[in-house]
Image: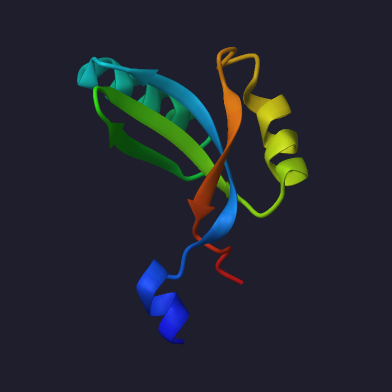
Length: 91
């Protein structure tokens, strides 16, 4: 659809922010550590000046995000849920 083309097919939802900081190398390390441990959950690097941000997951609801949040919280204690554009699940 026309709407999907404009938004890259992304929809409103939630992601979990696991890191932000000005050091790109640290951000990449966090992303790698996350992927090694939770390979089934997608992770994304974002740049919001001056911070490199690592967010994970594509969740339709806050509750969906919260379930994953609980799972990763011990490894990523600074994680928190954020509103985001997300890729709809490949159904």
